[in-house]
Amino acid sequence: MSDGGTGVELVPMRRRHLRSVLTIEREVYPRPWSRGLFLADLATRATRGYWVAIEVDCVGPVAPRRVIGYAGLMMAGEEGHVTTLAVDPPFQHRSVATRLLLQLTVDALRRGAAGMTLEVRESNVRARRLYERFGYLPVGRRRNYYPETKEDAVIMTARDVASRAYMSRLQGIAATVPGRTIVTEQTTRVPG
Image 1 (cartoon, rainbow, N blue to C red):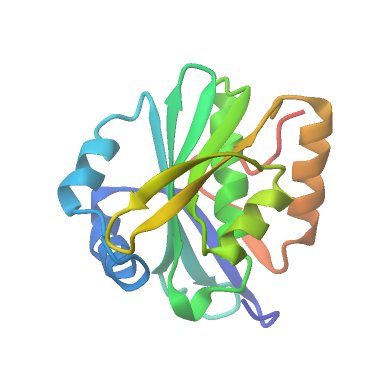
Image 2: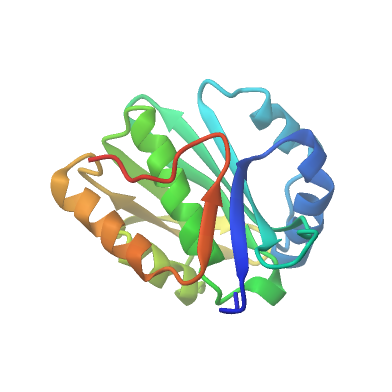
């Protein structure tokens, strides 16, 4: 994201976003999710939260509306599980994933999360660093979790996400995100 007036809007994922989401999915994952899998999760709003990041030109007369990333959350009791997180390759390294993970965490906290978990490819060092910034620590491994690459998944967990200390961590991360983030249909304020 440049400093030239560009922003990112985060909105709940809808069916109309799926064409763009599936295009990104095919670009970034060796075994992409199907349209049916996304539709099934979108139909389960009580325990799922999916968000898309849309590029917004904050200074132009007509704002382009391009989906540049997405993320998903599944709740299981007091545990939030990050099911997916992807950013269109030309928009990587521009804090889009950070924005999406902040929003997923806020969504999980509103749903009563006490902890968060996820699986990440062992070789995905960039993603692991992002998760570590959010307080996720490795707690286990799933052997051959990604059969298309015969790669293990590292299970990472963030505990006590409803604590004041974790809220301070989120606020500190949010303060470092450049540019403008707009959240539609949900507030961007970190609870606490």
